[in-house]
Image 1 (tube, rainbow, N blue to C red):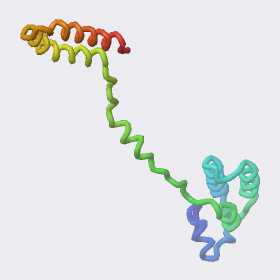
Image 2: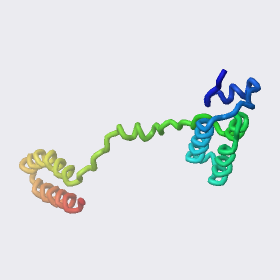
Image 3: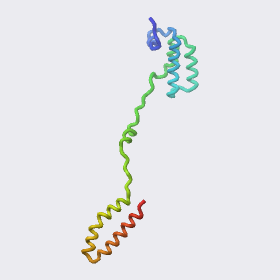
Length: 141
C-alpha cells in the first residue's frame, strides 16, 4: 500500500509516520510554508528554518511536525458591505442659487405687477423687489 502527499496526516494517525517522504512531498510542504509567509503567518527567519528542516526531513512525521501549527486554508474575509451599497447611491447635484432666485422672481413678478397697477404705492413695492432680486442674484457663487 502506498501513501501520497495528501495522506501524510492519515499516515501519521495510523502510526505510519515512519514512512519515507518523497521530494514532491517536501516541495508541497515548502509551498505551504511560502503561502504562510505571504499571508503573514511566518517571519522570514521562520520560513528559512522550516524550509531547511523540510529539505532534510525523511519521513511524513517530520514533515507533519514542520507545518503542524499552520492552518490549511487562509481565512477568507468578506468584502465590506458599505462600499458596495455606497456605490449604488447616486450623488446629489449641488443647488444653483442663481437659478432658485430667478425662478422665485418669475413666480412672484406677475402678482406683484398686478398689485402695482391696482394700488397707489405699487411702484415702491416693485422697485424694492427688483433691488432684492438683484442682491440675491449678485451675492450667489
